[in-house]
Length: 111
Image 1 (spheres, rainbow, N blue to C red):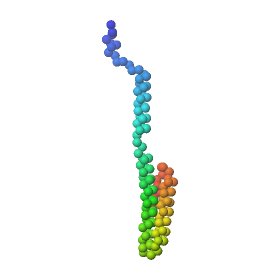
Image 2: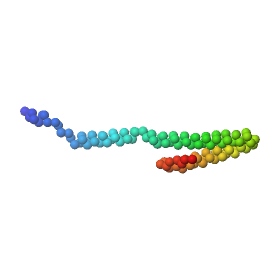
Image 3: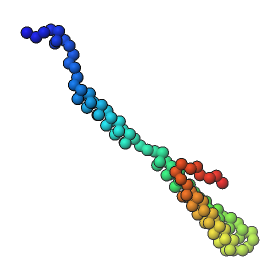
Image 4: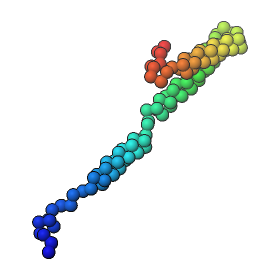
């Protein structure tokens, strides 16, 4: 006959099952870390691209507007426009080169 005392005792878990559960938990944590979106790098790339585009367009358009104003008031058409456009392009590319030479942890220079 079966002993009533041994039937009521809980079954002890096997050490292999405990080890398997620990490995499964560690694998799930690694998978969650791997699949977690890394938005900070992507956001930084978008900000950098937007800044490059703004510098390029700002330099060119600023040079065009200032050159047009100089040509309108001084009557030096088209030389003021061409000179200021050239200066705007030079300034824009200088700013882009400065941005491109920044290291990932550095802060961009102001001004």
